[in-house]
Structure formats: structure tokens, C-alpha cells
Length: 327
Image (cartoon, rainbow, N blue to C red; front, side):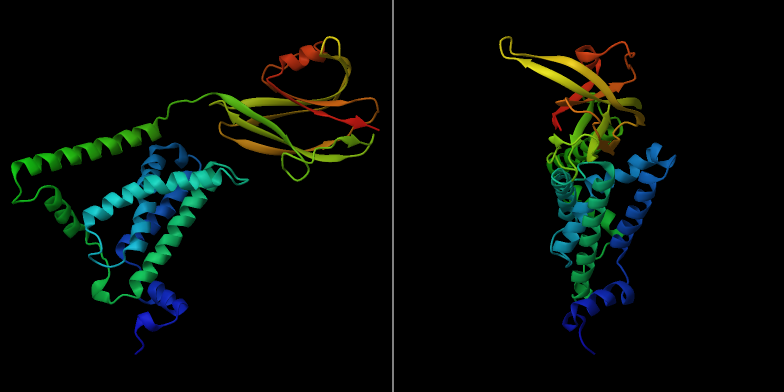
């Protein structure tokens, strides 16, 4: 027979997952990930404490554990206690790094891309860990026996032949670890409300902060996008208004005055807390003479039609504008 380590990687991987079976520790991780996804995204269930209980290990333990399993597949590479501590430390390091990487992508740091990224990382580490274990002789592979592991951990912290000082220090270490875990769980379960604000921005035709229309032909359509994000810790009904303005700059007083202002479009939408939408918007100006397009955002308090000009812009919650030339 050909030893497993001498087979092709694809054959070894197939054999590792479909012929030898997945070890108990990695199987439990896979099941935990599957149940956690259901608890995160399933309506009703995602509003219960079960979601917090299931997702805490995904943030604090599982990614690091799978990474350690991939790095150290052999029994005795690291002690069980060291494996647990490294798993916690690496998880605390890996998850923020994944969030930092998402911050530089079009998806940003939001729930869905963050969950998908952590799950993908963990799955890749599971595959690597299983592959590296499969190429080892059976007797050298790392295995977890939970009942024996509990006894080993107890002996590590409370050695039967250890001195009273050692037992006391180990007991304090256990207590500190428990307090740290409970504190982290409390912060995640009951986060402190941060600053309340709403995102409001406009994007060009390629959904970038560039390529805005400047030279506009009257009656022609120009594709744009309006971005809106709710971070107000409540559901908010937003109203977006777009106006065309004809303005004049006074070089003596160094001020801009509005000569005329006409409405283009108005739309309302409701956003939940932490919800972000990119709304397609078609800009079309029918008449020449305008030199500015104003985008105004209102949250619940929308002034009446009698409020116009700079007063309406001042009354808006957020406002943006483009300088244009209509021909």
C-alpha cells in the first residue's frame, strides 16, 4: 500500500475527509459554525441570547484554535494548556485583523462580510489542519479526549504535588481568566452606545468617490449613487431631496448667494440601525443656467414647502452638493 503521506495532495485531502473521517474537535467546530450561522441570520432567533452564546467562541476561541490546529498537527507539539491559551490569544488578534482588512474593501466592516470572512478563514484552517494530520502516522496525530483533557487541565492548574503557593497562583490565574471572559461577554452582550450619526454621501457612476458629472447637457441622464447609513441606534425614516440651484459668488463680501432654487426629486425610506444602502440615482437637469446640484437629507423633521433657499439647506440634517455647468 502507498503511505498516505506519499499520495498526491488531492488524494490525501479526499482520504482525510471522506475515508478517515474528521476528528472530534474539528467536527464540533464545524457543527458550532453551522449552528452559529443559523443563530446570527435566522429571524427571531437572532434577537435572543442564544446568538451571543454561540458567537462568543467564534470571536474569542475558534479561529485561533483552528489556526493552532493547522500549525501544530502533531501530538506533543504544544501542551493542551498552551494550545488553549494560544487559541484565545490568536483569536483576539485574528478577528480584528480580518475587520481591518475589510475596512479597505467595498464591503466595509459590516455584519455579513465580517461573518463570511471569519467563517472562510476558519474553514480554510480546518481543511489545512485535517490535511496536515492526515499525512502523519495515526499514532502521532493530535487528538482531543474531552474527559482526559479535563483531568490534564486540572493537573496543570492544580498539581497534586505542587506547593501551596503554586496552587494559589494557579487559582488566581483561573479566576482572572474567568473574570476576563465574563467581562468580554458582558461588553459584547450589552455594548455601550457610541456616537449617533448618519452616513450620507454621493458616488459617481462606478460607485466610487470620483467621476462626478460636471459638464451636463440639459435633458440628458447621468447615473450616480447616493449612500445612506443609519448609526442612530433606532429605526429612522429618512427623506432625500435634490434641488438645482443658480448661485452667484460675491468677490467683495466673499459669500455665495442663491438666486433661484428648483426641486428635482424627493424620496423617503426607512433604515434600521447599522443598515446601509447604496441607492441608484439618475441626475437629469431640464434647463440651463444652473450651476449647483444640492442633495439634502432629512430625518423625520422635514420642513414645509414655504422653507426654501439657504434656510432649507440649513434645516436639513446633512447636505452635499456638486458644482456643475448645464449646457
